[in-house]
Structure formats: C-alpha cells, structure tokens
Image (tube, rainbow, N blue to C red; front, side):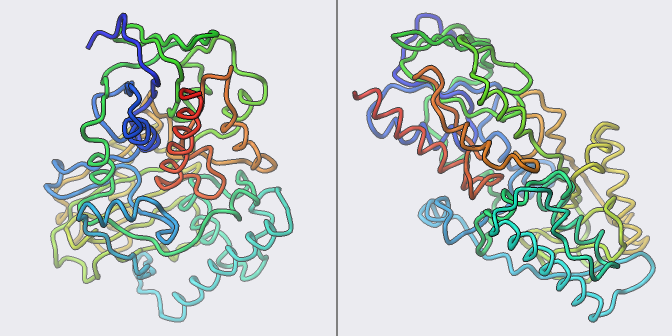
Length: 417
C-alpha cells in the first residue's frame, strides 16, 4: 500500500490495543485516520494464536485485570465473548513430593503479607525498591514471594521495581476470555483503516502538521498519536524532528519493558489430575523457576511462564532452550509421565521482536512519576499513548485502551479547534 501524497487528520503509529482504541474514537467522530502498523497483523502484544494447538493460546496479554474498572469488559460482553472470572485456584508443586495443605497456606499467606507490605510503603509515599519493603519473616518463603510478586507478576526482580509504581496498580477481580484476549482485541480492530508492513522511521513536526516516513512511503497528518512500545522509542528506531525533550527522552529510557516468557504446551488430558485454570507455583525456594496455568479455559493448553533475570537469560539462548527448561520444570514438578504427553509447544519471545522489545513497562525505584512525561504533547502535534503512560493500569490492555482513548480525545479537540 503506497502512502505517497496521502493526507489525513490523524496518523496513529501502532495497531496494538492503544492504537485500536484511539482509531475507534477518531473514526467515530468523522475524522480521516490511518493506522500505521510495522507488522502484518493487529494486536501488538495482545495476540491469540489459534493454529498451533487448534485452541486459543495468548502469546501476550491473557487476563482482563481489575475487571470492575476495565473498559474492555463491557466490549467483551456486548460482543458475545465468553468472559469468566479467574478463581485463582492455587496448587503448590515440588519435585518428588506433594506439598501439604499447611505449606500451601503458608505460601499464600506469605505472598499476601509481602504484597500488603509493599502497598503500605507506597501509601506512605516511598518510591524506593520494592524488595526493601518485603517482611523479613517468614524467611523461608522470601525467594518464592520475590518470584511471585516480582519476576512473575512484573517481569523484574523486586530490587528493580518502584514501590510507588507497584502500590498504585488497580486491584480487583480478573477475567479470562475463553477464546483468547487477543481475539477480542483483534475483533475491536476490524474495519479500521490500517496500513500493514508500514514501519515508521521518522516523524517531522512543523507548523501545519507532521510528516511521517514509513516503509510504504510518506504520510502527512495534522496530528500523530504514537502507540509503539517504549523500547522502540528508547532504541531510537523512530527519529523525531525536533528531537524529544530531555524529560520525555529520559522517560522512555526509564520505562523499558520487562522480561517475561509465555511458553505453551499441549498436554494430553488425564495425565495430571488438576482442575481447569489452576495456578501452579513451585514450593522450591528459588527465583530461577516457572509457574503454570493448567488447562486454560478447559483445553489441553498449559501456560508456563517465568520472568525477570532468568527469563532474560533464557530468551537470549533462544526458543529451544526456553522450551527445554520449561518442559524440564513440568517433568520435575509433575512426574516423568507428563513428558510423553506433551504433544506440541510454542513460546513467546517479545524481547527478540524488533518492533516490541519486551513484555510491559516497569518503573525502577525512584522513577514512578516518569509515566507522567509520556502524556505530554511533543512539539504540539505528537501524542504518545499506551500502557506505559497509565498510572494505575500500566502493563495491562485496559491501561493501553484508556490511554489510547484519552490521546484520541485530545487530538480531536486540537483538530476541531
């Protein structure tokens, strides 16, 4: 699709959740819009694969977090998607033994106490490292709690996470989508004006508008909304003229994406006696481990995941290593019978995707307020949007959606004068 000589009111860079949200607002308002997407598909980090397992597998976002506040829940219900609450059924597993109920209760209590302690520090205004707020006792669960709240929940060790950023995340029930969250997002993007395989390399802002250089040609627009992942900007993959100011440059460098791996396995039903959508965590006191979501949505698909430094090391080694380590973890925690029952596998390595670069944004200690800079206009005509710019729903599709809508409403006001 050649873009030369094309002019629009608003150009949106990125057809992920924030880009789709922004485009829907502006198209509904009657503006001329074009979404420029570097890849060949919708959704960005929210993508459901239905081919590998003949069942839904979300390569990225899988939960609708804070469902009582999440704007996507209503869309899901209105469109007839089967959304259901994650009951957070917990199973503790360990190599060569079955953890007791008392041990499971102790683990659950340690996680809840650790989370409450960090939130309490945030309420006091502390913006240091979240690891410093973990209780010293019970010491035997400290590493397991650090994995759960840090590497698994955030994709970074708690020593690299801002207390304030951690503490202000919106809480509430989580919903799952039986056909995949990526399927819902893709449905919301259907029919929008999108140019695929149109990676943007430069955005030049002048008095009358912006000129956008892409792999498919040049586009002129009055306003640009940039929704790409923070790492894309931090790496300088898009050249801005004039250059971003020091505050925004620092914000993109600060809010880099976390390291998180989603590995999918198709495991024959009946090999493991476990309920659908059970959360499995390891009783082994080690942050170099995995967790699992068993029998997602009642299918034979298991999600195995890890994050933080361990995920970064595995991803650097490549997909075969990632899958091998995750498979070995399953065998060690559920027995040798599970190995032959694994029929197919898949792995998400966002860090290796040049148009993404990681999982979701994380503010390091002392930098929670960096998110505010991403909501400022650049040169009066360029607005950034995405989960990284949301204070209370960062790292979620709900946050990306709200950010895209907010940017679009502001763009609409400028265009209409």
